[in-house]
Amino acid sequence: MSATRLPIALTVNGETITAEVPPRVHLADFLREELGLTGTHIGCEHGVCGACTLRLDGVIVRGCLVLAVQADGAQVETIEGLSDTGEIADLQAAFADRNALQCGYCTPGMLMAAQDLLRAEPMPDRDAIREHLSGNYCRCTGYQAIVDAVEATARSRGGRA
Image (cartoon, rainbow, N blue to C red):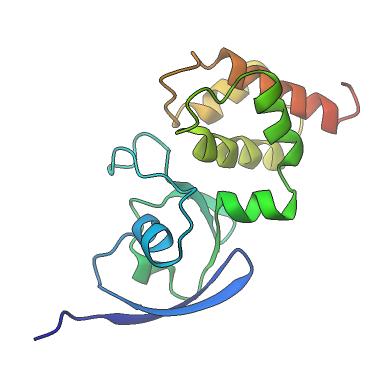
């Protein structure tokens, strides 16, 4: 007897995807294992670390807490999509310039969260940056370089480099 699979259709990074998935497969696992989009990292699998952060219908969510079937009909954007469109090129460069991506494991989720903040609040202060990124763990940098990179990107985008 074969396991139950449910049909889903969603748009991932602008591409329409149809698939059949087991009902309990998480969106992060589907993206990584079925679509090969490995930039969405799996960390704690409890929604705490932020490594699996992605956009679902324009809102950042934890991919380890969303079932793939819940994304049926949704727009999903991963770090690959933001990188490919160039939306975060300046943010990526700022992370590299300030050594804010030491091991790189948290970086995709951190970039997704940082871009979410900069879309909502183009000129956040350091406290707002820290607050918005507080749901993303980084064990390497001590966060200072990450906050510096986000602040520099905000200033650069605002013409105050």
